[in-house]
Image (tube, rainbow, N blue to C red; front, side, top):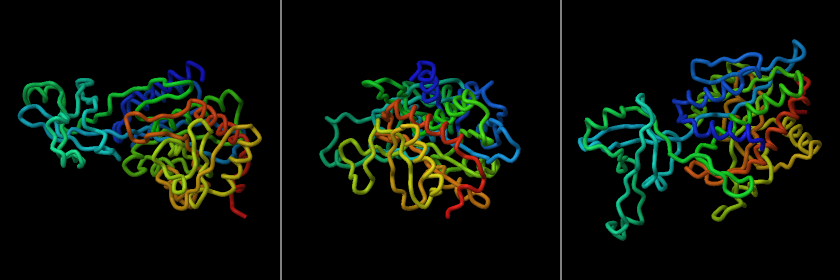
Length: 356
């Protein structure tokens, strides 16, 4: 991956954007796409909508969507000693939170804290077998009392895990929030590649959606507004190439083996075949995962908007999803960008995705 693209990825995943508080990430994306797209706007939900015009007036309207929100937490209560009670934003596993460092994003700026953890020496044997619920966890920001805390943070302030992007070995990287700022990055990179390749045969919309982690909310409204003929959601998928996964239930998907193409009820079969054919013709590695019902992604609501949208889900394999240490391959990101940029030029008719 080119250094410029890597720095864009790093800046984006490290920009705080818990669901409902995505503005910092959207500013990074907006800046990257200035001068690239023909039109750009932000709707009342906070979705960033970018468009590249087609080479003809009756062109199919295609929407690529990646959500830029991440899981996180919110300040719920401050006690007399200045310790902070909090609640999760999105699906956070209570198991992994105690002892983690967090950043509270307040009006005054970033405030570092740590989730309190009783030393193992003081934990009874039975206690070690139970999960400490969020209502019994707290954050220590190093102040002496409630007044000291209230000078720095306020009820409703969002927070994120403090981890950022780092390289492991080769093209393997680790960070919080790859789910799914990586998808928003892919959408932006596809727009950049399409602009470089020439005017497309479709009216191409790239949307960085908001509030996916709390109910696919941004995709619901933005898809209605864009009214696409074709919609492709870009998200993360479960990599099952590490210990503890049952491949009989969740499929055989590997980090570094290319993007995952979903197949099933949520996916238009003609669009799925077009993605497969494109991958083969362009020598792009890919994997297939069965999705027997609606996926838990933006593709779910995209498909059911208005009178229906020809929808696909392209996922990047990810280990340790919804943790502060998510792991993926930069090569998989590049392959996803290449696949989507190539398939755009193979979409020629609004009606080509009606199943036979």
